[in-house]
Length: 219
View 1: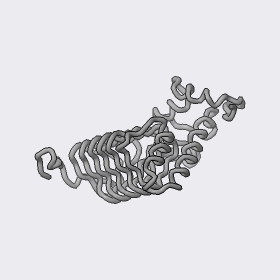
View 2: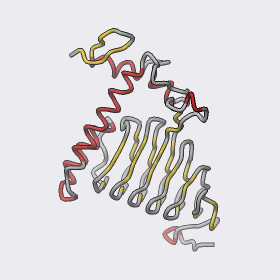
View 3: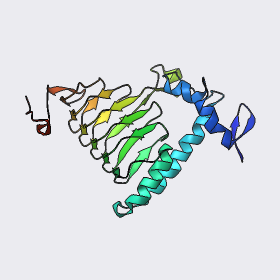
């Protein structure tokens, strides 16, 4: 099927997956942090994935929590790989791309979360994500003439993290192992392992936090 226009030429839709893995395509440039403009000749390829993500998340958002198996099937379609059976998502859920999300085992995502994943979102095992959490990998240039362009950088949520309700994680941030992000925090810098952060912008509230499951107490 010929659906996608690229530099004025119709491209077979089946070829777009191959293009994503080639070097120096818009997909690799986007994930490497290059500024992507709407008039980029390859932008229609990117926009097809964006539209697909919107279609799939719209389907997810017609379901209820009792439809967990259907939710996981659709989420697997969204990210392009099967999620573990332990994955638990409560709709609604929003994503602007989907295919750059990587999810580990025993991950819980509460309702009304937004994953803008063009820069790549990696979520390791045993992560808890509260309601209305925003993982935002894409930003815009500051100059008014360039603000419709985008710049993307990855987010990495490491094993055992808990992100509280309404928190926002900004592009390029890594949240360390077993750390906690307090409700409503806006995180713009990396968070060390075993640390609690909160506030706008987020600051360290408690260092060397350790889980009692590891025979340690909060210091």
